[in-house]
Structures are given as C-alpha cells and as structure tokens.
Amino acid sequence: MKNIVKIGYILFLFLVLPILFIKPIQAKSGCCSHHGGVCGCDTNIGSQVCCDGSYSPTCGCTIVKKPTPTPIKVVKTNPLVQNKTIKTMKITIPQVKKSGTGICHQKGSTYYNQTLKFTSYNSLQECLKSGGRLPKR
Image 1: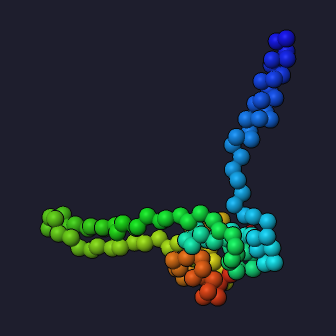
Image 2: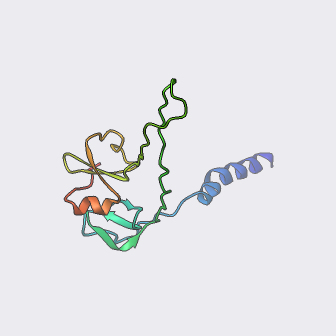
C-alpha cells in the first residue's frame, strides 16, 4: 500500500504539477503565417513582429512601459575651490540600436550590448521604417 501512495505522489509531481506552471504562448495560429512566422514582439507598440520585418495585423503582445530615464549629474570639483559644479550631463540609453550593417537590435537582444557603432531609435518600428532589418538569429 505504501508503494502505491509513493507512486501516486511521484505521478502527481511529474505529471500534474508541471501543468500548473505552463505559460500560455501569445502567438496564435496564423500570426505572420505568410511572412515567415513570428520572430519577436515589439513591446513598445504591443504587436508581433514577423520574420520579414512586417507587423502582424491580428496578433499582439504585452506592451512594456519603460521607466522615464533619470538624468545623471556628473559633478567634478576642484579641491582648491570647494562646491563648484563644473559639468552636468544627461545620459539616455537607446531602446533600439541600428548597426552600421542596418540590423535593428532591440534592448535585451543577443547583440544589443556588442553593438557599439549605431544609430539610436525609440522603437523597433522606427528602426525598421528607416531601412533597418531584424537580426536573422
């Protein structure tokens, strides 16, 4: 009897419990079906991005609200002249970088941090409209 109870617990742990943690997939059947499939999500506008660079007219995704960047004050002081502000800078981090080869890298993507020479864009859609394309990977 104890073995049957143990088998019941094992079946519950490996078969039933994982079902509770499965997340639903947002891409539906037919999303970008004639455009190479779904390659990503433009979280700025909440639309699925097809692999050919177009946007799905029927399928959406979750819009992510970005926090407003806070300007960083850089203050240099001279030890001889106390409390004198010399320079203030405002630093903003681009949401999308278009590399010199015309590839649009969204913040958080594989090559975003490695792209050092780029043009900044506020959204993936702006980058694609400027002639950029999505990465193949």
